[in-house]
Image (cartoon, rainbow, N blue to C red):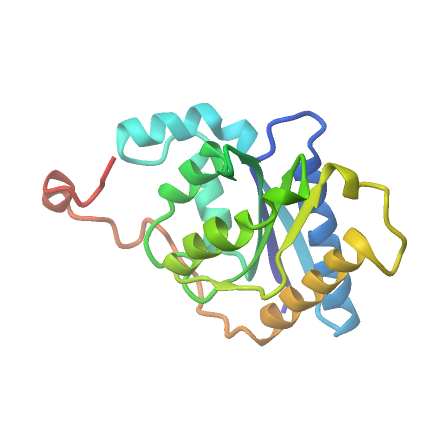
Length: 206
């Protein structure tokens, strides 16, 4: 069975260090899966390309444009790499907006590797006080090793230490969880829509 690893990147730059970190983590995960004899494929949800559609989704109350496809991709994931730049000491607004429109229970039981980028290592605790509570609330299984990459981490470490080692360890942990995970079968985020009367009563907040 081929495992699907989905990278959700909230990087805004082009090129983006946030996207680069997500790609490194996905590669480490794929390598670890292959070492265990498990085939895998990677799909990327680049939130930069969905910024306008996400705003429209919040205003309309239902997925518009590319958001619907992105949510379906997330729902079909066997493992997720979620990576965001740090703004104002927390995850970016674009990152939070995307996960605000993820339907309840879509990520329940799904292994999620947490990652973030920032200017200095002093922001690294954002992984524990912001990202981990968010994904715990969503019912995901968060990987024990989360990865933060500060500006000084890029190109500054050897093969067995620093960022490279953290990426490798986190990828291996995500691969282990993805391999052990029992396939819940197809999950259609729109298969159990919120009744219209519940929407009127506040079932869709926003």
